[in-house]
Length: 181
Image (cartoon, rainbow, N blue to C red; front, side, top):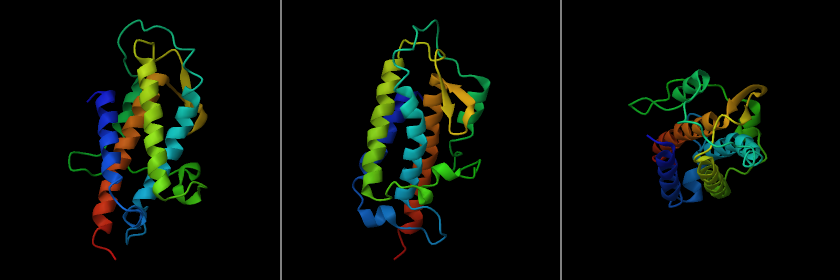
């Protein structure tokens, strides 16, 4: 699926989530995992690390000299994110402290959903700016810091894959908490 299609599907999911009340989105599963809104805080924290760097990228991108081709590392990172055919997360990854919603100053309430929608809008704008540009003419630091950088094109695809992973997680959380009271 193309990046633009993934982003549109993610906007559709946000519209579905906006129909839910705050109690539903903030309810913790009985197993002690994140609530749906905490998951959104995590997504916001991760996305903003990349989005803030992209703001400086706009003027640095050069014209494209061929179709986008992800690097080997990017392919592996992107492939590690989405759930399998049954919707299960294949590669569980321990959350870094700086991306842990329970250690963040961001509120895990309805504002997390609004912020997520805003961040997805920013990501969409960036993908539009990158059309016809060389997505390898600019690198961004990953959440691991300066020791690992991704080309801009790889980074936007990684962010989208990361979001897919956590939108699936939100769906699973809402299923778990639906019968809880």
